[in-house]
Length: 342
Image 1 (cartoon, helix red, strand yellow):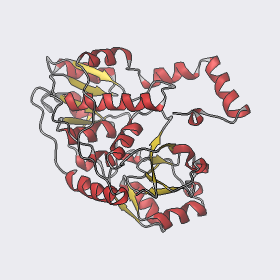
Image 2 (spheres, rainbow, N blue to C red):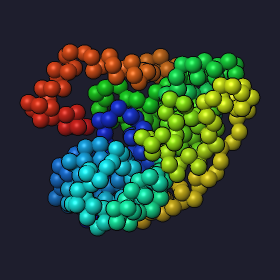
Image 3 (cartoon, rainbow, N blue to C red):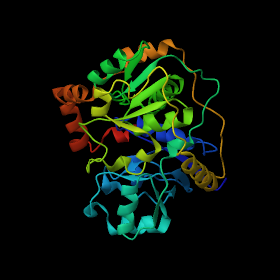
């Protein structure tokens, strides 16, 4: 493998779940030579080929696809976001065929690629390959990830345990090292929780690996069968899902003090992905790596790190100085946060 460099994806998107996917990929990298921005892979240049596990959501900026020829890709756990046929250039389709078959994170992506003539299969999500750390002890607290206040209040009525309400959204302008630290902190929180309530894939799937009971809650505002949100297709089968109406009306539908154990349906997906990725890089470090944080970090994170998504977005983008700064960078300087160095 001395003929290759190894790269991991970095991001400037607000969702810290992206970075959790990169942490999963790090298990299979003997070293990290490059941090390559997901949305600028066509700009990447290297004197030798760089192996990159391409587990991410793609096509947010389709004009930056396909990646440069300096990237040696493993196309697995791929999700195509907001796609229509006009986004898929002939060059990109040829690239996917040449480097396929494409492991699709969800069945919607798989079916879309197959209809384009791109060989594809359902690989599932690489976060199923995260490693449980036996040194992290289970706590007595419950984590609610990106849940509305009325759901958090309802959980609190059904248990005497402390309920922490957190978000998977990153604060603006974290650099990549800080983002990875935040992602590892979140993984620690999921790992050490008594149970987790969420509708976010990259909060729920790690809980399967960590043996943390997880309640996947289907909120009526954004149901999982919504045609505009196909990320869950094929992955919901990994969980026992409860819809919001049943949860609110039936107080006995889920016992937060004695939560049921998670299904083990993810194990075959995990084994297949481990084989695929380790064969690609020639490396597999199955040793647990999630940092151990002190219990007070939970309280501090809950107080300082939690932001409601809609309020945060409205306040941020309504700031005139922010709008001016973004316009200056994007229109005059032709730059975005994607251009920031790690």
